[in-house]
Image (tube, rainbow, N blue to C red):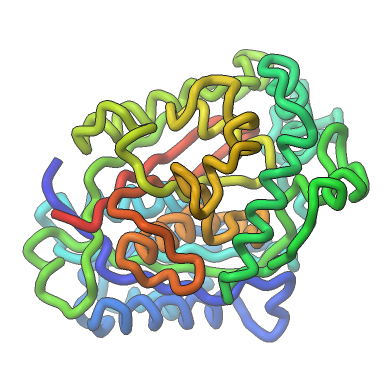
Length: 380
């Protein structure tokens, strides 16, 4: 693929409720942080992609609430509904099109102003499934059970993901839930939907993120440190849960294979130094790791017990704390990109790991219907 880089990132602190901030306030903060990070002004941005969702924002054409804050005046602007990694994918294609040199991508969400069970219930088929009252949590509980049944993964192994990621978040000043907890703490927390305990689930969160993507010519013009996009792909599976084996994630496998092929990677389990993965639930980190080929199928839980995915392990996974430590829906995947960029620049502070090449990952749809994978590198 042609060369492009992420040259600016900005995130605000993830909180349970930013009741003092509007959508525009949150995005304004993250956009200006990204511009400062890149050494740019808004006049240096050629076009803008906003990522939002009408259901989560409680309004139609939700992107309009953040247009001014995203600096869209006199610029081409497009709106993406879904996870921020998909918005960034669109922004990347614009930077590589030859028509634009720089793209600003924003994503925001205020879960505190939403009823997530009602919103995610609306994701289900209106004829056969929606009336059952299912939501994202109950659907993912079904997926967790199917995954555990197929692989023999235990609740204790799933709980270790929560222990690891909440513990990692202690070192991240932008995280919502930094906690030193134990496996027993996770298993003693209330059952939300069997087999998922409260501490197996990501929290309700508010937050936003912005990234600036530039083509090769523009990437080296500004004072920001470029992190190069070596490969990116997304892939979608069947919509109906009954039409797929939800204990697996073949769409993620295909997306990972395509992204790695672009990046010239043949053994991701050996050639990736860090992974920021969309861990809305504990079991998902394990399932996604296996689907990405970052460990053998069914072995992620056992490897986690051995410490392979800790900050000082073979492959640090979610050293930022991941979504379990703060999950602004829609912005979650874009934050994974931004966190990966910080790591590859050596700017992650107390949770910095040794890394040159990393993976960032986002999800759309029920039980991981669609996946977007980014391969990022500190070297051109």
